[in-house]
Amino acid sequence: MEVSPSLLRRTGGALIDVAAQVRSALRDDRTAAGDPAWATDSELHAQAGAWNGYLADLAARLDDAGDRLRRVADGYTDADGDAGRRLW
Image: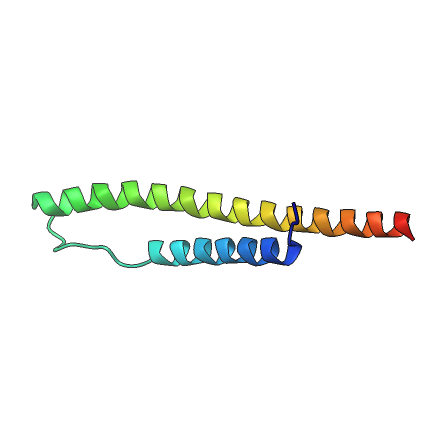
């Protein structure tokens, strides 16, 4: 099986970019009418809190996956270099 370190790095970078976009979306305003007596306001607040937690966790997992892919790519590059030196 052939592994492409550059593709792994690009994929890792893309995952990290998506994580940044998710974090940016968390900063968007999701306010309602501003009347706590309205059921929609209290429900929106609860839903926004739940989604914020979920999306923050997702962003962290995307960052972690991206970092791991980049480390794997570096490992393959190092292994290829070691093998090449042994052959020559």
